[in-house]
Image (cartoon, rainbow, N blue to C red; front, side, top):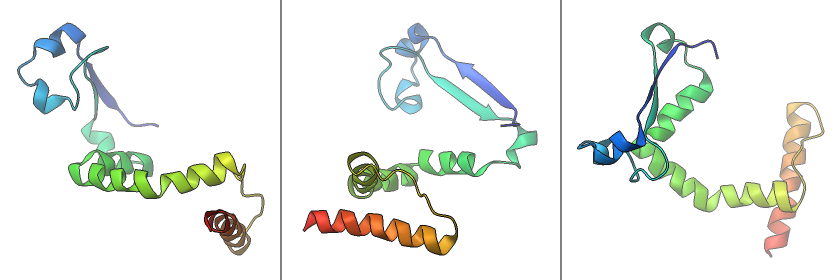
Length: 113
């Protein structure tokens, strides 16, 4: 990444006694303090797709949607990639890759029957 960040790292002893702990942290601090990165204004306009998704997922709506995804979509990907060993698409081209992925999904669905 060529973006400029400002990083803040809070000490564990400071986070444990901070009056804003409930607003700042999702869980009470146990092992380490809060670590936050802010994108500087110059590079904010050039966010990568990964950074844009991080911003979306970190929002309350994004967390709610992602928690739903964890329960229904991620187990399917885990089963296909880890249990079946189908973790690589070996063909090239959109049509061939789509056909190969549909075969992977077909194997998964047949197993569920």
